[in-house]
Image (cartoon, rainbow over all chains, first blue to last red; front, side):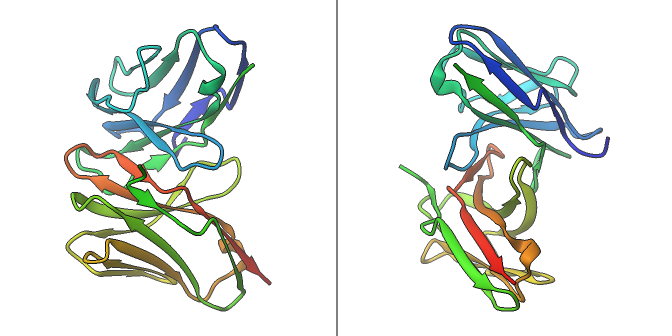
Length: 114
Length: 112
């Protein structure tokens, strides 16, 4: 596909469970970003990958959150022991290089923790 | 403490008139500013950007103005069209990290 894709589009889980959210960036894009958007707020930065490595993970809220990008393409955001406060739309974006003036966003995964 | 603020949660404009969306920031280290447009159930779509070394950038109906001394930027849409109705987010980039810091958004409604 031409754009960033994210799966699943919706995820409902119970408090305490583990979830994985997947992002397929635009082909050839080396930079990949994860953001989280809560109701009534703008997207909030979580982590930025350049290639396979996390260049900036300062936005991850705590050690329950972890993200990987093992082959420099697809990325997975992993959340352990989910809490109700983790409910949000998780957005992935990709960019063509190491100094992106534009980030291309996917449609997001809506996570609901009951 | 929000580094990027959009103080108007909503704006209503008549079709054909000008829409002006405002954004204020606090961190003078931001090197790039971007506007994104978001429809419900979709991800944000890039609209227009401006480097911190410029004061104006224009692209068709969209113009962004940057006033560094006031730490203020605005997006002008003229003429406004019903299809412009969406949530508009202002974002600022810290050059060293590439991460974007977003405002809370302004819901624009263009009335036919």
